[in-house]
Structures are given as structure tokens and as C-alpha cells.
Amino acid sequence: MFDTMTFTKIVGGVCGALLIFLMGKWAAEGLYHTGGGHGDEEHAAGFVIHVDDAEPVEEEEVDFAALMAAADADKGEKVFGKCKACHKLDGSNATGPHLDGVVARAVGAVDGFNYSGKLSEVADVWSPEHLFAFLENPKGYAPGTTMGFAGLKKAEDRVNLIAYLETTGG
Image (cartoon, rainbow, N blue to C red; front, side, top):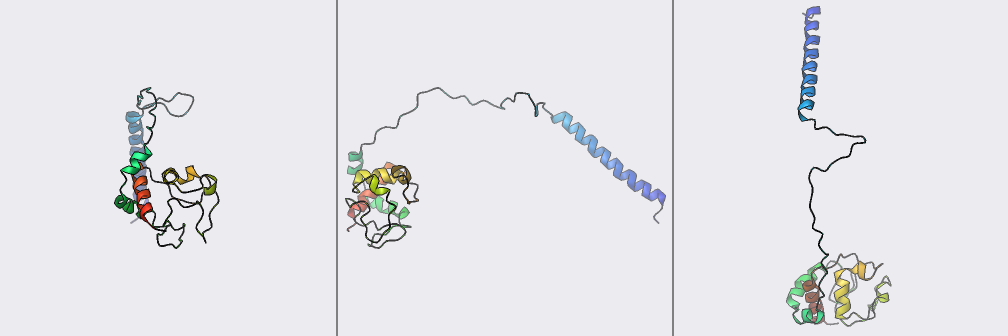
């Protein structure tokens, strides 16, 4: 049943299939090859993005007093949801110190909490202005602080949170 002629047909079929595969590959490369490649040739971008040479836009100065006058403590309570993971308002410390009565409190004044020491180098009292700057970028405001929060980018969120924290007792 398995003689020389059958074996020859099998080998011929495999070689023929390989030959057709290689010729198909060669034809496809000829159709789709666009030149270039590796070497000393300079590579051109597939497309160019045109950029205007405009002056950089300066950030407008934030009128802190006007923002604080328009602050909404109810909205600040919702923003405080981002702080709840590490801070409490009941006078007990968590990962971070408690925040009840934090506005106008001395920096690093919570008993029983181990501060990093970097905060007292940038401020003495948590005034609304200091809180506003700190909440935007804690690590940028006080480099070396152990607070791992990225910050609140919207000025309205920060003043609303400060207005809410002013309503909490201490």
C-alpha cells in the first residue's frame, strides 16, 4: 500500500505547495514593497503636522477673593468624597490627619499624627490661600510631602472644598 510512487507523490505535493507559497510571497513583496528600509537613507514622515508659531498662552491670574465669594459648601461636600479615603472629619486620624477645623489651623498641629515635616517649611497656618495652592498640586507645593494625592485641577473644586472645610468644626 505504501510504495515508492506514493512516497514520490507526497514529496512532490509538499515541494509544489512550498514553491507556490514562496512565489506568492515574492509576488506580494513586489506589489506592496515601498522602498526604503534600514540603512543610511533618510526616513521621511508619512504625514506632516503643521503647528502655528503662536505665542504661548499665559494662564490668567485667578481672583481668589472672587472665587471664595462664589464658593458653594454643598458642592465642596461632594468634592470631599475624594478626600474620604485618607482623611476623616470626626477628629480621628486615618492615613492622613483629620480635617475638621483645618482652615486657620496651624500646619502640622494634629496630635498623634506623624507629619513628614515638609509642610511646615512652606506655611505656618492653613489659610484658605495656602489650602488653595496646596490642593492644586500637593507635591509641587510642598516637595517631599508624603501625601500621595495628585491634586484638584479645577479652581472651583478647590474653593468649594475649602468652603466646606470651613463649615466643619474642630
